[in-house]
Image 1 (spheres, chains in turn yellow, purple):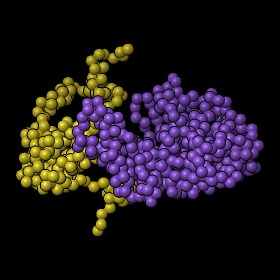
Image 2 (image 1 turned 45 degrees about the vertical axis):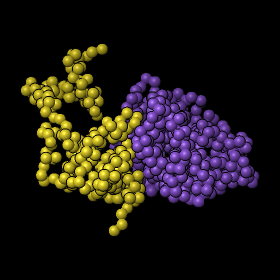
Image 3 (image 1 turned 120 degrees about the horizontal axis):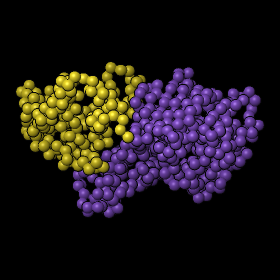
Image 4 (image 1 turned 60 degrees about the vertical axis):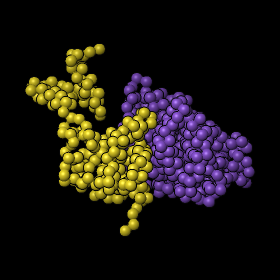
Amino acid sequence: MLHTSESIETVVELFSSLPSIGRKTAQRLTYYLLKQPAETVDKFSSALLTMKKNIRFCSTCYNFTEKNPCPICSSEKRSRKVICVVEEPSDVLAIEKTNDFYGKYHVLHGAMNPLEGIGPNDLKIRELIMRITDEVDEVILALDPNVEGEVTTQYLSKLLKPLGVRVTRIARGVPIGSDLEFADEATLSRAIEGRISL
Amino acid sequence: MHLRSLSLMNLRNHDQTDVEFSPVLNIIEGANGAGKTTILEGIAICGLSKSFLPTTETLMIRKTADFYRASAAALTDLGVPYKIAVQYAAGSRKMIGSSIGENLSPKEIIGEMPLIILSPDFKEITFGSPDHRRRFIDMMLSQASKRYAEESLNLKRILKQRNNILSQAKQHGTVNEDILEVWTGSFIETSAEIAHRRLHFISEFAPYFLEAYRQVTSVDERVEIRYEPDSLPPEITAVSPSIADLEAAYLAVAKRRKTEELRRGVTVFGAQKDDMYIGINGGNAREYASQGQHKSLLIALKAAEFEYLRNAKNEMPIMLFDDIFSELDKMRTERVFRNILNSGAQTFITTTESESLRRSLPGGIDVAFFRVTSGIAERIS
């Protein structure tokens, strides 16, 4: 049963196929766009096409980039001695926002997940190993704190340590700036376990 | 903790139910299939994020509806209000919001409103297979510790992944040793963490259980309870081992049984296979206990669970009794009933006939009666 036109339905379908967008939101977006002048819609469609055409993987760190190598990899200001390994390009963005990391990145594009058929060969692990030269002092593993991220961390650590590089992982702990009593109990419990001496 | 009110929408045969409770005793009567237990299930959804009955979520949605919702308002022992709402629509994630925040995961609300539940289904704890006893321990420990709740979810997830690797290995006849090794490492780490917590738990729980059993029965019977971890030798578990000790023991098992695991394509050891031994007069209760003793054991386990959770949470748990008096004889009924009332915990009882309960009530008690007919609940005087 079709209440609207076929072209409207197609757009709604497309929007609702995006992550975290349900059918209602998809409808709202569609009707909003429909009300906009043609130029606005044109901007959207050409921006999407341009993005898809121009963006590729950086051949060094495998982050998305327009220029190869990417601005971070080609920057002289950033230390070549430290590589921070993350699962997704969005994780690079999160760490960049801290303004406190001056090394380079390496994006794995996922974590090991046998149930979804993702093994080490489906990730940019070989590419990471190739980057470990005498120049690199430390590899920081900053993967998601879940079962799959944890196992991938262990796997990488086993591969990297024999190469004579220092392997570290980010700490697990309580968020800064709020009261301890508001931290969730499982996190707090791990923070106590991972306490450090002063 | 006690519940002030409960609202159910489209839960089983309840279209829209809004009830306010007595802080002491609530007796819910109705014919079989009227929807009495659904009220208790609604409370369980608010406390544990799911029903205490083995059921499929989609089957809990009323036939003509596409979602169910359960919400409750409660007061902690210190008088702080606590609100919780859980909504589920077929095919989507459960939406949970409470006084803690919005968009919560189940593990974030489990234990906030501690519950002790006794239903005829739980008979299996004393004479069924080990998984019923594990579920009993898991439900209690998950309510007592969020870390335990998280670790037990992790164990399930790791087990699934590891079993997938092993079944692939069986199918193809080869396995990537490095991959299997890291998943085994992670599995052992989590298994040891859980076994360690369960061992420690039983040592705290046992005295409560022995005392509770003594109170339920008048005769002098010797009962015992101990944890029986799968594939860990008794000489290790007997001397309060550290997590590292347990990891080392599991690692030895993993090495010894590796060929078997690859051949069968499944994990053959670990905390997901543990059991709890309940003994009576020197024998295993599963085999030796009489019908009556089984009932007494179950009540004692639940009474001990109440004491344990009350101490662990420093909050009075809420008691839900689903139709248990049809299962118990008069003597046990009265004794149990007296103990419940003395504990001061808010209690919910479902029954098909409330007359005999009414008669055994002491005077002056704050009790509310509800009658449920075809999914409609009303408070009666």
